[in-house]
Image (cartoon, rainbow, N blue to C red; front, top):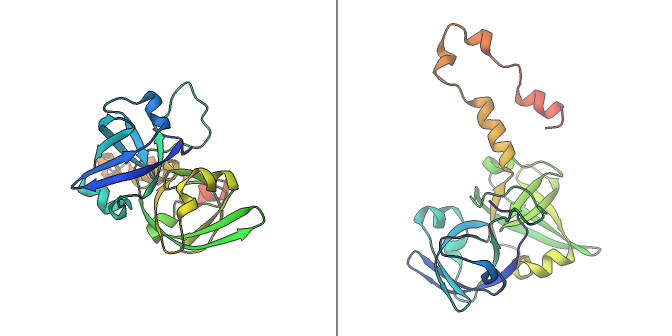
Length: 218
């Protein structure tokens, strides 16, 4: 489990067949074999490490669903170790399981911030709400506005400086993880077990609908 608060920017040293090698610094203060590390928001397992460099295995499923397959030697990546119970929970609940990839459509300066607009598939848009949380390349961010197929976020100078958003440009692909709460709510509302086929189905049917939740602020 992660918070979406990036600890440092790492540098890709090599992307081999199903193995990524990353150079970092801060995360080695407390890193162990088998630990989870979010790389651009993707939860990976440390398979070996030495002298400020760690290796992690990458499955084909991960390559298919994230932007890790487009990384090359020298690419910058956001890094976050798994959440510690001793630390402050500064972001939101992030699983490190990427839902899909979005494309940066524009980056516009707005006073001291950068308004970043990202286009994503409609299958992801349904989980995105104005002023809700979203994870972009592992960064916990707040949605400022929406259209039918894009969302925008206001990136403050600190976030821009401390994450790989500093290196991004229009057309770049970013990993997206939606707020996990919306996905669980949808599953609970749409799931029907075997008992739903019984004669008592109508009596047991819930009065809670998506329309009801939206009207009441969920």
